[in-house]
Image (tube, rainbow, N blue to C red; front, side):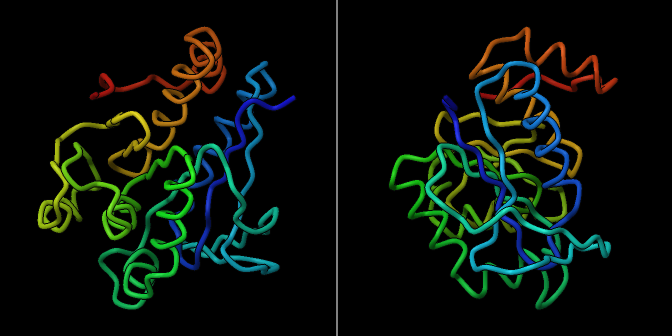
Length: 198
C-alpha cells in the first residue's frame, strides 16, 4: 500500500529539471523502499507537454487528489510562456489552491513559487524562488528568504533549478527518514547543499 501519492503538475514550457529532478528522486526513493508513488500529470488530458528547452514529455494522466503536489517553474521572465502564462491564466493556481484546501502538501521549485503566490498559499509564509523572481515574489505577501529549500509544513518552496533535487531529497528524509534520502543522494552522486529553512 502506498502511503503518499505524489503528483508533479506539468504545463507548456515548464523547466525540465524543475520537474524531472524531483521525479527521479521520488521515484527512486520508492524503489529504495519509501512508500510513495509519483506521477507526472497535467490539468487536462494531453498526449505530450513541451518543456522550455524542447523536451517532450508524455504525462501519466491528469491531476488527481494527491497527498503531495509539486509545481515546477520555468518561463517567468518570458511573456506568454511557462509560469508567466499560467499565472495570468489563473486556472492552475486555482487547482493548486483547491488541492491544498483538500489537504495536500504543496511544494514548488524555482519560479513555480509564483504559482503558489497567485494561489494565495504564500501569504505571511517564508518562501524562496529563483533569483530572477525574487523581487516579484517579495511584492506579494510572502516573506522571502534567501534559502535553497524552505519547509513551512504543508507548503514548501525551493530556489534555483537544481534545488528541486534537494527539495525532493528533503521530502524523502522528512517523510521516510534520513537513511532513504542519504542512500539515494549517494547513489545520485549528489552533494546536498545548505540547511533546510523552517
